[in-house]
Image 1: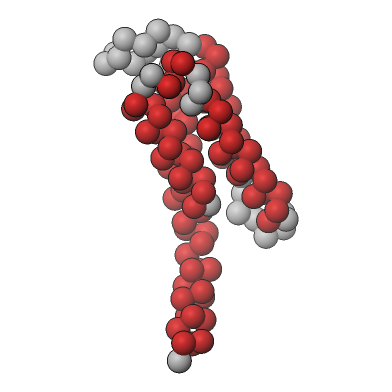
Image 2 (image 1 turned 90 degrees about the vertical axis):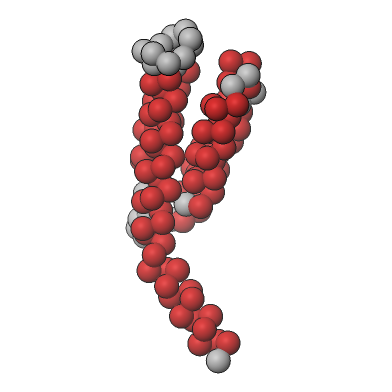
Length: 119
């Protein structure tokens, strides 16, 4: 009985894994685009000055996350390492003073890291 339940649970999880991957990837890329736009200086609600470096960095992180694939042809370890590198990069960027001072930005970065972990 337990084995049957476990088998059904794993089967459902494997069937929904691709959907979970797509949802988490979309969430992380949306956050990267929001942060890139935030540092573009065009956001009217904040008094944040344009920071070209951070704007480009978040745009490139968006592209990096979009390039991650849930493909059975590519070895799972390679994709896992790329995800870990993205997570580490997001952790490292939180150490910048400009980002460390903003709770909102740190919260968005944490959400992106969580989404990448779920991938």
